[in-house]
Image (cartoon, rainbow, N blue to C red):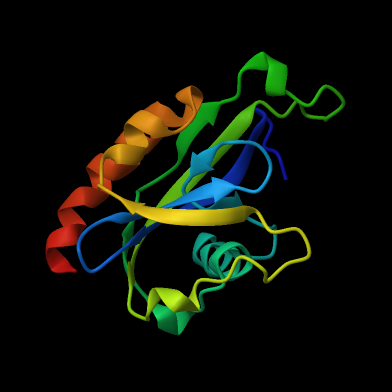
Length: 158
């Protein structure tokens, strides 16, 4: 569902390793790398959407992770005009997101990209905490910086 301003509600997932690195995933289509993310359905909370997306995109279940916290309110990014969906009503212009910081509790061998017929990702690696803020596609960088800045203090409790 797109709101009246053209933003789709969405969750982002920042998965933290024991060593304090974050899960950085390569998209199946194209060369992009990003945090797992996905839309929030009308009948679910942001946390329910996060756990659904975690399973669909990464193959992890709630008992595989510890939820350390989330960003307050929406963080928005606008898509460049070339990515706008011309026939959507209202016009889809971007995403408004809540980011969750999760600590991986299970062995990383639990990661499985094949939980859906069309996997979102094909590979992953662990990167330094701030690496994604400089290396995600340009229009997501401000949101990644805000999310990481807000969630960084929660690492101390992990």
